[in-house]
Amino acid sequence: MPSGILEGTIADYGEYDECLNIVFDDNSARGKYCMSRYMMPMPPKPKDLQWHHSVINISGTPLEDTILGWLATNANSFYVLNGFRAGICIPSTCNPHELELVINKSKLHDTSNNDKTQ
Image (cartoon, rainbow, N blue to C red):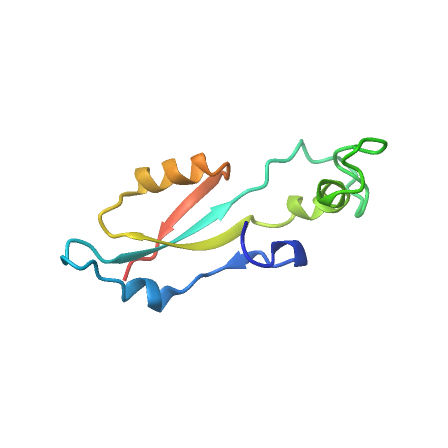
C-alpha cells in the first residue's frame, strides 16, 4: 500500500535518484525507475454521487467498524481520483511484462506503466 494513502496521499514517488544510482556488483544491471498507476476496483458510478454515503453497504456486518468500513464510506472519492501513483525501482533487465506480472500478483491493478527510465 502506498505511503500515506489512508491520509489522502495519492502518489508515492519513491526514491528516484537512489534507484538510478543502483549498480549490481557485476555491472549486469542498474536500477530502473518506473511510475505506475493503480486504479481502485469500484462498482459502476451512481447517477447521483453523494459524499460520505457508502458505495458498498457493509452496515451491520463485522466489517463495519474496520478500515474496510471506513473505505466503503469514503470510497466515492475514488470515482474522481485518477488512481494512485507509485514509483517503483526494478532491475534494468526487467521488461514491462515482468513488472506487470509482479503488480498483478500483488493484487493491485496496473493501468499504465509509464517508464521514466533515466
